Length: 442
Image (cartoon, rainbow, N blue to C red):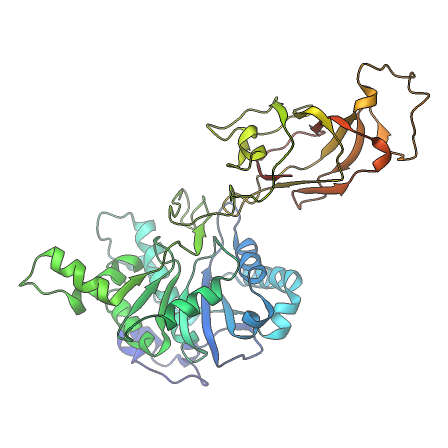
């Protein structure tokens, strides 16, 4: 596509409105260092969502879960697929630039947007499969978005991974994909999948992209992109002389799946207005509820928070699962009463989860009740050492820390002069609109 890329297929045949408008095949907007020759190129199309988006969170997850070596061997291309909304393109690009300046400067991250000439008149698309006019237009444009992005990325690396703008991933995901490619016994595969959902985590050889895109363009008005992907395998590898079981066996030879999934879908509000998308990849094994290698002191635990289903606080305290509760209100408390009282050197409370990044504790303090304060009354602490200088509450708890900003983490040391601790509690100071998850209590 464009002046610097080889035109692999006759785009004018499938998009005749482009005749005389070659600029339609080039990005109208670009932030790029021109990185090429990488192992894996990741393409992420995004458009304005009616209720906001997940793009920055997706980019953050992708970058944070790369090590320094991996950052040198990949490329993330964000395709802002808004052809008539220049203000949105510029504001989104500005947000990306201010949030990830190093990734853009190094060439790891790239941002492009299409020319308005690229798209045909989408208002006259014939409705198919019982879809509404709005949905037909939305999925038709989506097919064209994927085609543009795939052809743009084809000359930048050896493999191409299709992602969406509302996913999170795991540490080391890039190396995992590279090793899975290397471990294939034969090279005749067409697609490697790293998520079972839709068009997330689909890896192609870049030299196959031109004919894959050509197939999509043949039927871009007729079916959604994930249906067309399935049709490719049926056309190439299934025979009408055999049953569907034989077809499934043949397809499995060329469409290979990695488990557990490396990408999880986190979006709820679809880019299609009014559509709610709650799909989750059951094969994505979150770090939430992970097996722990420490044992917390024996304690009696309780909370005033509304516990969701089986995700009680005692589970996370024992390291068996995570704690999940409804919106915290001011004054809600989690109590840990140690049996017997213990000396605490350090504490860690980590909230949030990849699938629910907003479910964190905010404006919540960490407070302890020293053993020497039990059964005491305010003003009857004359003989106690106050060298620790912690603020004391009316009921004699010491405020030793809090959940900092939007990190969802409370971590700190406890002064030894405090002595043994009878109770530790988390106290919500202000109400929150989000639910809360605690995935580590230590």
